[in-house]
Image (cartoon, rainbow, N blue to C red; front, side, top):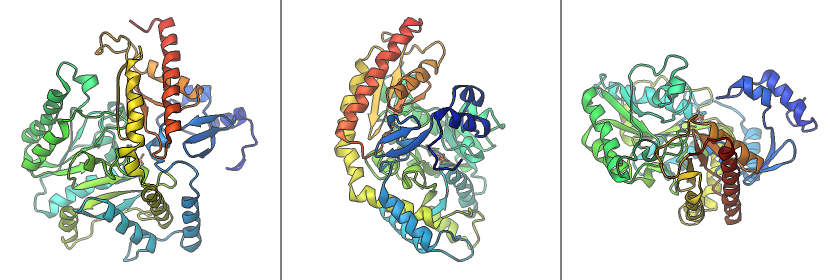
Length: 464
Ligand SMILES: *Cc1c(COP(=O)(O)O)cnc(C)c1O
C-alpha cells in the first residue's frame, strides 16, 4: 500500500498496523487485539478517521498543534523551502537563511535576557542538550562539582536517557535502570492528589521548600540546575497553587543554580503568554522548546539559552561537543517560521489570554458540579477534570487507578472528541484556534461523556 491510500477498509489497515508497527507507550498485545484508531485527515480542530467519523481534537494532537490542522501557509512555506534547499547541516562553519531567520525570530519572542537558540528535533533531544549544557557550563565556570540536576516526581521531560532521567515517571525509570546518576527528584505541587490536608497556598509553599531542602542537603556547590515544567502536562495538567512559583523564585534568587523551564508544552501561547515561565514571572536560564514551535507540522526542538549561559559556554574558547544531523533543519525551520507567523498574525497568544481561554475556562470549571468530578482546573488553554469515586470524600481514589479514566477516554472518542486520561484525570489541551462554538461543543461532549461514564461505573460498582 502507499501512504496516501485510504481505499482499504479499516480492518485491513488495522491488521497491517498490528503486524508491523510498534506504538509508543503502548501495551502492544492488547492494542493489537483491539485494533488502532486510524486518523486519515484533519482540518482546523477536527480529525477524520478511516470510517469518516469527525473527531474534535481536544488535545491538539499531542499538545502541539497550536494553529490547528491543515494550514496551507505552512505547507506552502515547507514546499518552497524543500525546492530551494531541502537539507544542509549547520556544522563546520555553515548555516542557512531559515535557521538564521528562525533564530532571530525566537530571540525576539523570548524574554530580553534570552537571545540564543541551539536546535534539535524534539523535546527529548532538547533535554538531552540541557543535561550536557548545564554540566559543561559549570565546568567552564570552574565549578565542575556542580553536576546534580534536580527534577520533580511526575514531571515529564521526554523519553531519551536524559529526558527519562530528568522526568519523574516511575514506570519509565523502571525500564532501563534509570535515572542516570546525578539526578535528584523532589515532590510535585499536586494539591488535589497529594496536598488536601493543607490549604492550597500552604501546600504550594511547603512543596516549593522541598527544593530549598534538597539544595541544602546535596550542597549548593554540587547542584547544577533545577528543571521543571511551568504546568506539568503529561503528569496530568498539574497547575501549581499560586504560592508555588513565587516561593521557588525566592529560593532560586538566593542560590546560584541554573533554572530550566521546560517550555515544550507551555511555550508558544498555551498559557496565554509566549512562554509559560513568563506567565509565572520566572526568569529561566534555559528553555527547552518543541511541540508548538512548529505546531507539530514537522519535528523540531531547541534549547533557548540565556546570555549568562551562552556567554559562559561560548567564551570558553572550546567546542561544545554536541549537535545533531538535523540541528536547525531548513525545512523544519521554515515550518516553524510559518507557524509563528500565523500565531502572531492571528493574535493567538492574546486570544488565549483574553478571549478563548477565559471563555472555555468559565464553562470547563462548571463541570465540577458533575457527580463524577472532584476538581476542574484550567489555565490558558490546558485543563483537567479529576474523576472521583466519592464526591463526599475527595481524597478517595478509585480502587484500580486508571481504569475509570481509560473508560472515560474511550467513551469520549465514541462521542467524537479526544480527551486524554492520565490516571483518572481527564485532560484537554485544544488548538489555540478553537472557536467559541467549538468550545461549547467540547464542553457539551465532555458532559455527555461524564454522564455515560458515570452510568457504567455505577452499574459496575465502582462508586461509593
Ligand atoms: C512532550 C514533552 C517532551 C518531549 O518531547 P518529544 O518531542 O516527545 O521528545 C519534553 N518535555 C515536555 C514538557 C513535554 O511535554
